[in-house]
Length: 200
Image (tube, rainbow, N blue to C red; front, top):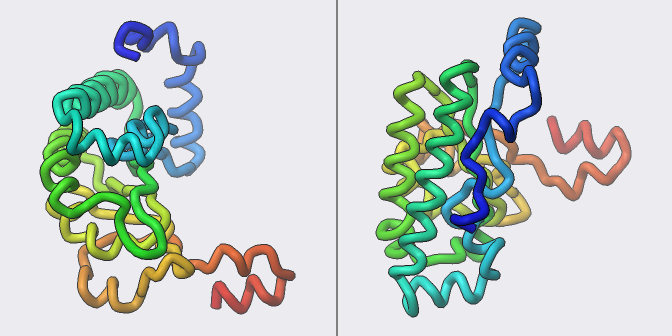
């Protein structure tokens, strides 16, 4: 991966991308910066498979730390290139690090491996005055919320109610957390009345 990643970002981006983005912003659109594999949990899970990734935490921490530093450094370099040209309203870090029963990794592993990288990434983003730094993860993320807040993340989505997320309790416990979602997505397969009832 390291050998194949092209860091000539100018060649990787569509011609005129910054002008297009600025026009969208001028037209009143929300500007969101994200990536399909930029998360510190997401990338190793997708490249190694979940079980192998979780075993590597214990079996080969040197490899994993090298991988996570690579993700961090590459993401910062790429996003710096973008943020020097375009203002952004929201940053979304894709993770999917939980299931209905809770996080897929231990809280200790999060603190040791992910939290320092999150802190470096969010410190970098705050230099650009970005006020909304969200993590996207399905499942029950409740126990990870204080760790994410401590890492500089201030928003979470989609708050899967089918994944045991108690929206009302979380709002009371973490009034500083920005929340998006909280909708039972299974209801969105129903008719208009069912959808309206769920939203209400």
